[in-house]
Amino acid sequence: MIGPLSKGTRRAVLERLTAAGTIRESRRKILGLFPVRSWPPVDPWPAARAKLAVQNVVEHGVPPDLSAAALISLLLAGGVLHTVQPTTDRKAQKQRAQQLAPEDWVSAATRNALQDIAAGAAGG
Image (cartoon, rainbow, N blue to C red; front, side, top):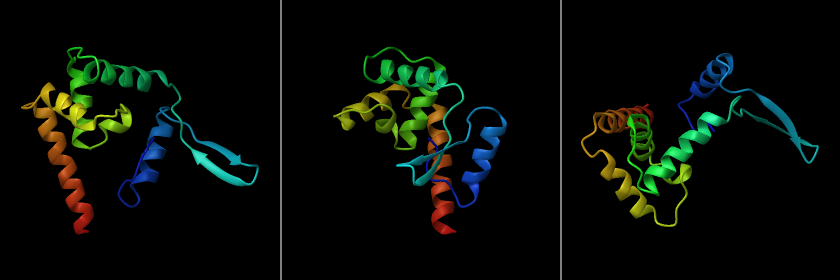
């Protein structure tokens, strides 16, 4: 799923991902009346593997590899870890994720980039 992006960015991102063969456009109607467009992944396995890696690390304590640690850092910095790995105890989940790499350069770079994007969007 692609969430909110800066004005005009969503379309460009969707076009690039479609052209790369990562996602495809799907058109259908709800109740036979309301047209809906979505962009599901062409291959759902990478996303499933990524979700499983997040679950194994955050919920089951499996030591993360570099890509899992980077992904968790990105999700944590974006404040969306709980949407990828639903939990009833967000505080404990966040603490566990933060323990993974408190001084990790990926976390810091991701956090700084997201803060810069947010500041740019807020400031115009």
